[in-house]
Image (cartoon, rainbow over all chains, first blue to last red; front, side):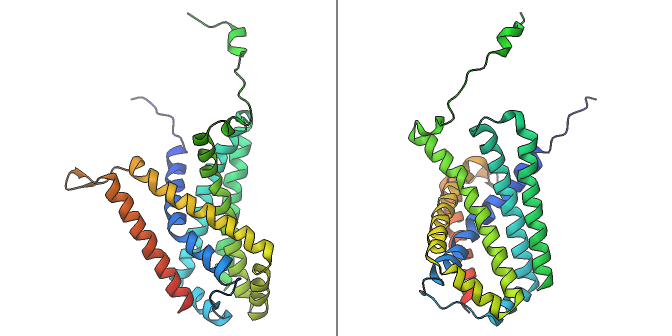
Length: 118
Length: 132
């Protein structure tokens, strides 16, 4: 039996695509509401109490964590390859990967903490 | 036949701005850079969640901060990139994923269509949850 070298790449790609789908579906509307429509007064923003109640819902909390976590894994994977190949920094591939996935892990942890203390 | 050491040392240098030479290359890089907008979105969402948890005063401050002109410009740019991400993602998904129903491959157009329906549905749910 031949011993195959295991690679993290398929797993990372899976997270990249899961994050790609989720962000494609959810990001535009959230950005439109909280980045454009509420700031410009096109729509009335929800009150603190209303959005607090929404975020107390376990499903909404899970959605925030999954959206942030997988979204960051998606972005980290893409940026890692773009920075390494686009700027021709193949020599520093390991360091670039560490910074990208490290940032993703950090922001996921921040999401878990922020959502838990609400 | 083996390559000599000096031959292996030779590397064809590609100019750093190679991706500006053609429209398709530029579109490729713009597509990749949509991930910067995703990072900004995550940070922005987390700042929103933090302010909501901190109470009405912090939430008001977040809303005031988000209404500054440069923030609206930044978010408009991020939204444009996010929409580019959505559209390009739906374009490549049928190429990357072979979906079979009863042994027959679902055509790419049908899969892309289903994704646009899902985008509309998810956006509607978010709109209802936030505004209701």
